[in-house]
Image (cartoon, rainbow, N blue to C red; front, side, top):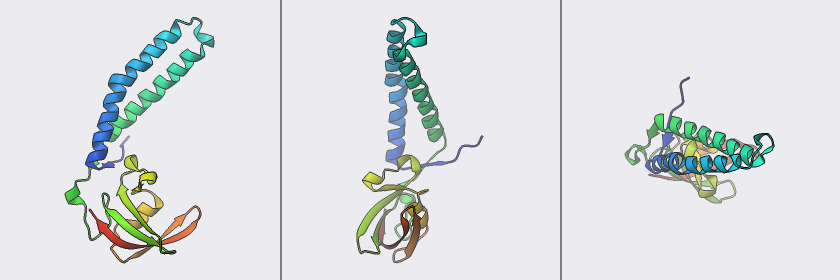
Amino acid sequence: MDEKETLLTPDGLRKLEEELEFLKTVKRKEVAERIKQAKEFGDLAENSEYEDAKNEQAFMEGRILTVEGMLRNAKVIDNHDVRSDVVTVGATVRLEDEAGEELNYTIVGSPEADPRHDRISNESPVGRALLGKRKGQTVTVKAPGGTIKYTIKAIKR
């Protein structure tokens, strides 16, 4: 199966590498210790601590595989690749909505998306609508709450 390319900023790449290192070196040992302690409680068939620890181990191993896949298929967006004349991944965009409210978003790959910190995915409705657009253009975004129009006020690296 071909895995899709993972777009990352240099900071996003560093964070994924740190997460992988933590999962492999610290978390694995913690979970193994929890499993060992839970086994000491006796009958594994009715041992909820053991079941919880095994579930945590499965989740953690799945996350390790996911992160390894993202890193294997990572394309790091160099700041030199980010343009200021057109919206690309890595650009920070200042928008104005129909009510005149200004918003600032940085367009990032989906692993780095964090809307609470104004980092939106290039695959989100707003991110998709903005890609390839220029300052002064208006984009229409179909969102669950209805249609929203944004005017691009500025683009910066």
